[in-house]
Image 1 (cartoon, rainbow, N blue to C red):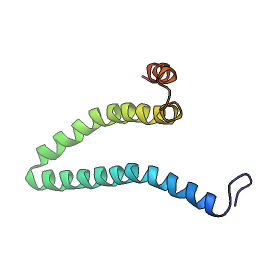
Image 2: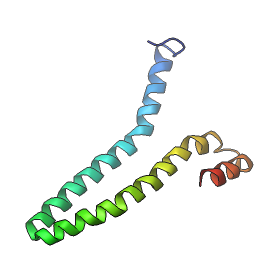
Image 3: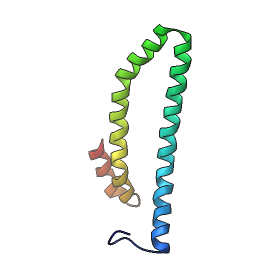
Length: 97
């Protein structure tokens, strides 16, 4: 156990809260990977040009989507810290976007 971390039931409770918060993100990532695999398999059986079009589309939109979703995920901890105070939350959202 690291220094400063709660031991016993309090530490287990904290670990469950963290795992519960991380689970939806993990499931979303797994589902996205599975969907990409299915897309590639279906288009690969359809035609080479279709698969090439998917590759070009992903090369253009993939980085843009990753940048936007990364920025949004980066703001989440700050939003969570001010979730009960709307006056403090508004500047956080403005600065995050």
